[in-house]
Structures are given as C-alpha cells and as structure tokens.
Length: 547
Image (cartoon, rainbow, N blue to C red):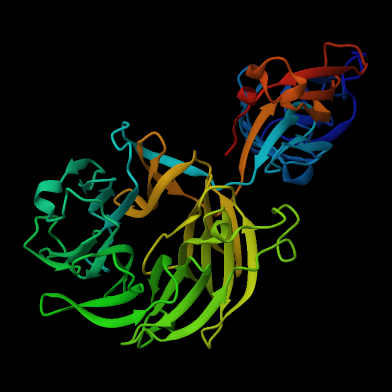
C-alpha cells in the first residue's frame, strides 16, 4: 500500500474473507483495499493489494459472506456492500448519521435547519424541517372549488370504515359515496340530505341515523342498520324546523345530542337548545338563555376507566369573548366560564402583538383533547391556539398560548372514539397529539388546506380527507412517529461551513434560498496528498428525500 505516494496508509478497520486468504482493509478516509496472501514460496509469503472502492470511514467491519461486507462508522453510520467479480465494491445500502455536524443555520421562519453533516464519502448537506410526513394516497381534480366543509360519515360507531363524504358549499350540499377501493361516486340524489342549502354541520346521532343541520331546519336521515351493507339509500327522513323568524348559526353534534344556537330577528336574547332523538324525531330536551352570542360549540363525552359518565359536557365559545363549560341537562347548567378579554402583552409571548381588540380573540373552534389529562383546545380567529387543562371539578386552568399563524384556527378531532389527535388548521395544518405523555404540536408536510375530516377506508386507515385551496380533494396518510422531514444533498466531501442568503441579497428568485457551502476535499488515490476547499451553491431543488 505504500508503493503509491498518493495512496492512503492509515487502516481503520479490517477482516478476513471467509474460507479465503484475502483480507479487506478499510482506510480512515473511506477507501477500501483487498489484500491477497499468495501461496507459500520458498518458505515466504507474498502479498498483493488492490483498490476496490470508496465508502465512508469505517471503525469496524464484518464479512457476512464471501461477497457481502458490512461496515460501521462513527455515530452508528453503517454501509452494506457487495464484492463484485473483479474485486469491485458496490454499495447496496447505507445509513449515514448526522455526526459529525460541523455547522448549521436556520431559514427565516426558524422551522427549517440546513446542516453540514457527515464526512468524506458520506458528507452531505441536510435540510431538517420539523413537520409530520404525509403520504398522498389519492387526489382528485379541482372539482370542489368553494367547498366550505367536509365530513366523513359511517353508519355506526363500530364500523371500521367511512362510506360517505358530505361536502358543504355556500348554497348547496353534495354527498359522495366512498367505495372500498377509494373510488368516489355521486350519492347525493339517494342520500336523503337536503341538497339546495348549505350544511352547517352533519354527523351521526345514533347507529344508522345521521343528522344534517341547516340554517332553518335539522333533518335526521335513517339508513339500514345492516353493518355489512354499503347501501346509503335513505329509508326515512324527519325534519325539525325553526320557529318563524329564527335561524340556526352555530351547531354541534355528539353523544346522541344536537346542540344549536337560535337567533331571532327580533330583540329576543340568543337561546341555546339541545335536542335528542325520541320516537323517530328530534325533541328539545334542554334550553338556556345566553348572555352572549356564540361563535362555536362542541359536545364531548368524558370517560373514566373506560366507563362513560352520566352526562356529556357542552363547550361554547362566545363573542364576549370567552369560553363556557355547561352540563348537558334540562337548563344547561353553567359549570365554568373563562374570559379571554385579557390576552394582552402582559400574558402573551414576546412575538405576539402588544394588544388585541376583542374581536381578534373570538373563539373560532373548540374541542376536548383526552390524554392522560383532559385539555380544552380553543382556536381563535387571529391564528392563536389556547390550551386549558380541565380539572376534575370542571374548571379551566393552566392556560398555555401558541401562535399558529394569522388565519382562524379550525380544530378537528381525528376520531370521535379516540380524542387523542386533533388537526389544527390555520395558515397550514398542524397535528396535536400525545408523545410519551406530553402534548406536542407539529406542522404537517402538506400545502395549506381549507377543510379536513378524519377518514378510515380500506388501505388508508387513520388518514384524513382534505380539500385544498384550489378545490382538489386529497386523501392523506399520517405518520407521527418521526415528526421531522429530512432531505439531503450528497457532496461526497466533508462539509465545513454553511451560509443561507436572504432573498434581498440575490438578484434571481429561481435559485432561492442559496446555500454557500465550504467543503474540504479529502485525499483520493489519484490526486496528490493535498487539501483544498470548494465553494458550492445549492438550491432547494438539489435536495432529495431521505427516508
């Protein structure tokens, strides 16, 4: 190995090839040699060396077979290589670690880091962004422009898959059937839904019965309770109509109840009603006069050791602005009231505005997050997420505030039977979930969407249905086990320093952002034993996905 002045001479790993007289040598800069021990001649051995390939520097080596070489490096780097005929090394698989990380910088919003990682042959620049990877399972054409809300429905709580998608538009409603192979069919005409009005909310009120809330009527639609049947032809419909001059603005469905706010054309105060399915139709079972107009509502059923409590809880967001927790009884007893008038500079993080007008912090959505403890999540119209802890006495405590963006925050629990994951849709979609006992919030690796709904269908369990701003319908799979998106660009050199230019510093928008990377060229067999630095310019298009 020393005959060639330019050849590396420091051995970092080696091992015998099974059943042969050949040794594989790994050098500290990643070059690999094979050394053959020839037959004994006149009581002496002769050695013959041959250069076979280049990997990253290895610390240990295992010869799995006579044609497979497994090498590990610093910080759990490893590579699996095949020894091809003619003693040439082919890399079959490799997992380069981040180490050593010599330099890094962040982009403007602080959510993406560009890092110099690895060394020698495994040296690369990585883009690391904190967001949950999504898998685009299917996507439609732009047929749903103007869709304001989407809801996936299934006949019963025990059914594994959803079979209907209800699409709400400004002055109409559409119903799509979802087949096992995720084909969408138009099921509007036979669904029993009111089609010439906007659907404020819809849901399942009991097995085989859906409820559709419009501004002046609430319709219940009964279907066959045969779980094996995928027929969603309505068997019977029943309407509950508002009094003359009254209109429904806010509604919630859950736990066998429908809760609505009634607004009158006259000076009468706002009223909250709860209705329950009795004798084939909806009957009013609770009523309360409201002190403040509602901005959102939800119904959440609490569990203790798997047993349902006698009454679910009713959560209201008001234009006060504030939050009310009520019991689901005849007079809708108030359990707790929390005002959010005082969200000013004294209670907000430094990156918030110095003060907020009352209209800015009006709740847009509210829901319960059930983990090891119970939390009430409130999304406001100025892009703020509020998280309260719900105490056993049904009090709201330990407020935590997070700014998600500038658009209203719309909260969507991903499963009605498992409130452990919630989508917070703002300027971009976020996933709120439990990670080893802590409540965490991570953005999704997907473009902004207008409306989302939990969706279970064959081959896409635990996914979501989302309507994007351009009117396309997407079915997305989520994987929250590793909430980071990593992309890489191999340099095949050791990166040393990195800079990120701001858009104002460049004349062309086609190459933004620009990464200026200073690398140190390693020794090679062909080149003289000298070091040199390269200056490289990279754009986002240069990075590939890293699994």
